[in-house]
Image (cartoon, rainbow, N blue to C red):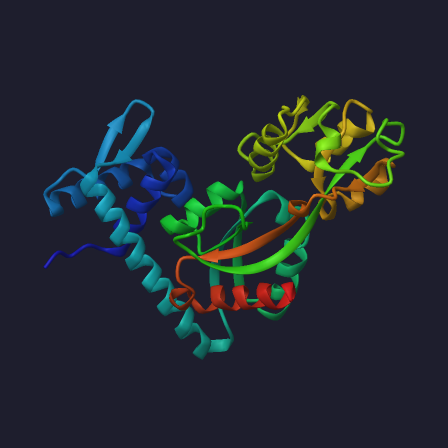
Length: 297
């Protein structure tokens, strides 16, 4: 029977996820040479190359992909065991990996996490911001325990629970030609310059085909990466922007901006919590999912 130590498995997973031994060494606080030695030992043990070396880094071979899949399962099982056993010590302890989309990060997620940690002081959460497509991929691959993304994302292979809803608004300078309108549909905005968000964002992926259905294209004058930057551009009267109302409450007041909710039915959007298998989650992660679901209701 193979005798593969858990440290080597963890380091192998880190190398695959980081795409390079040097980056994995930095993440795991270990010398790169030590990781190389462990990877070589693994390859000798299984009798096959696990990594392909490239000038830009490394990637798993077909054998490495199989090893990666099983290594993640082993490490997740150990995390689950540790989480469940920790309940018998002094309250729930554990470590939760959470990927969330940009909107949830700037809307309500921080408050929801805050109330959760107030009741579970021994739980640590590693929270990363990604676009929804990256969140779904990370959950499916086991790179994170829990994901928060838009319901429009392709979550067919995951378990999904409703989280929050938000409302898209057109935000503009008070002197903008549309500011006097009592109501506004998306089609009404397409004759005016707009501030664009990240090309990989769900917002971009949603608005672009909707404009095409009307026979028009989005007129992006400037592209930015955050809602705050979009609001700053709007304050300078450079263009208008379509953003979640809940994400810009602070900036709207701070910058003196005008907003109008879009009247289109799809402008009310649903965020969801996604996991690979709720029952297989470590206890702390299941508790966080339960907490987020309760808050959303």
